[in-house]
Length: 138
Image (cartoon, rainbow, N blue to C red; front, side, top):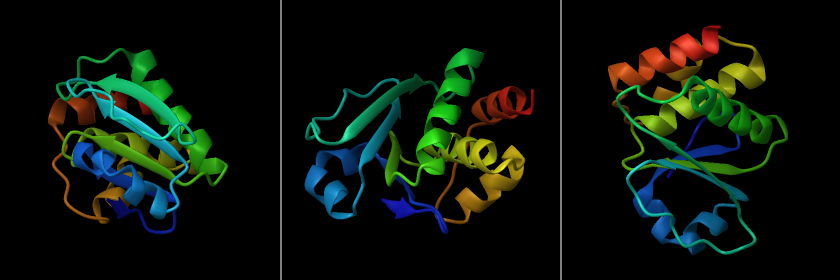
């Protein structure tokens, strides 16, 4: 789990969700799961939970990409400590967090993605990147 600078948002992977005590110890109040091929993690019921089954290759519906980015943006605007997780924490989670920052702060997606990628390792797939750019620039 790594925090994105200046924000109450963390990027994580599926393994982070196997330790709900660690998640809660970090002060996280909402968890956003993005893996389309992972089982939902068991989490305590006092954590808010959202799930958007995004695929890496860019075959997601525009509505799903938009809903994921805007939902996390709402949490971000309300300063809700949020953990966004995908399988490895390198691709889908970065795109959704960057999209949320772009929406919440009125910035470009690419600018927000650079900020998010500076928080740690990144390996964004070209298809997903193109999809987020297209959806969030329209």
